[in-house]
Amino acid sequence: MSQLKGASRPRTPRPLRLLAVALAAFAIAAGIVVPTSAAVAADGFVSPVSGNVADIVGGCPAGSRPTHEGVDINGNGGTNVYAAAGGQIQTAVNSNSTSGYGTQIVIVHPGGYTTRYAHMVNGSVTLAPGTPVNQGTLLGKVGSTGNSTGPHMHFEIKLNGNNVTNLYFSCGQGSVAALQPLGAGPVTPAVTDRSFSLTSTGTLQGKAGMYEPVVALRNNIVAFDADGTTIAAVDTSGNVWVQQGSFANGWVGLSGQAKDVAVDGDRFVVLKTDGTVIAKDGLYSTAWLTQLAGVEKIDAADGRLGVLKGGSLFVKEGNLQAGWVDQGGGVSDFALDGTRIGIISGGTAYVKEGNLYTAWVTMRNGSRVEREGSRIAVLTPEGIVTVKEGTLWSSWVNLTGPGVGDLSLSGNRVAVLSGGSVLIKTGALNATWIGAFANSKAIKIS
Image (cartoon, rainbow, N blue to C red):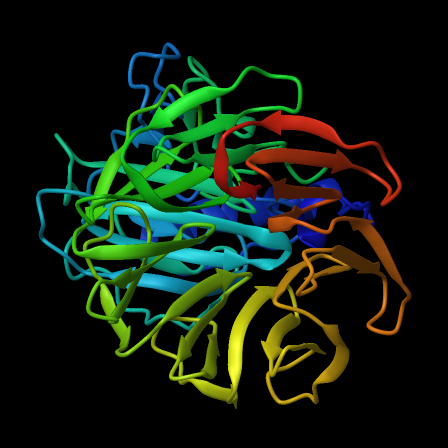
């Protein structure tokens, strides 16, 4: 996100800076929408409201509210809430509910960032999903809807699904002013080194790092997905459970009658036992949207949602109300990542790059396809994992096999499952394999 990197710019003369700040203060008091300028805020996020910082992610002090996912800014009931940075509205909900986030807005920003503004006054949100906003755009009014004990602003900043709010706020920092710069934030994108496996007995296991111990996360699991520090799992009763942050954090129940789940940042997609797909943006949002019926497989990544229905692949991008684009029939497997889509059709892997209307490029024979960044992995019918890195026309490199039954890609890592054992390599394609899990039947790295 270029606006978050603190690039240098010509310095505004002091009298003009003071005038701009004074005008901004007047505009806030008068309730005027004023997208901030260079004279008011340096590159980066600004505070969406004025008030006192009471709780950051994990609580103040840390651990007092271990499941808290944002920062609470108090002492501001009925005041204006402004967009912390420019972007596009992903979620806009007016709700008088006494659970969850209540009236809220989620904004998607360039570079993998999202911000959430929760517990606002019911009816104060007038902007619709898909609406572009500038930094400083008026979003609503501070309220107490949802799971709230009094008027305050619950505010979150996430980067690629990872909660980075605490890089902008700290316990005991006191008060903040609306449109006040929040600082540099993360200099480089947050990186996770998580790996997961599902044992033959249905136990979901995780490792927070390559050399960290294996942690048993949840029993009686039949399907799972992970993105960043968010894990979603389906149990044998069809219930969906989500854990965010540390492996020690609690689980949140989302839905029943499920057989599969997909996670994309703060977006949750559920494939129900009757083949219906439902999705929502936000862990505590109660607004599930039905997407399609008769579906066999789902995937979600980088703002795109894909479903396999009757051998045909359908993909939508952007908000959940967007239309489906038919990607073709005869598909047995698919994977989404970035601007690339990979499919298996008639025993051959194909990949397209760019928008949803570009042409398919033939890869090679395969039974599974995976996509991540500049890498494409194909599992051949013989169980050989072969990967290409770079353009769609780069050369293939055989990594391991035959006999591999599952694989996963994330960042510069590759994981494979063979004979119940999970092996992971990090870095170059010729790096050494390292054992991660035993007695496994499914894997995922994030």
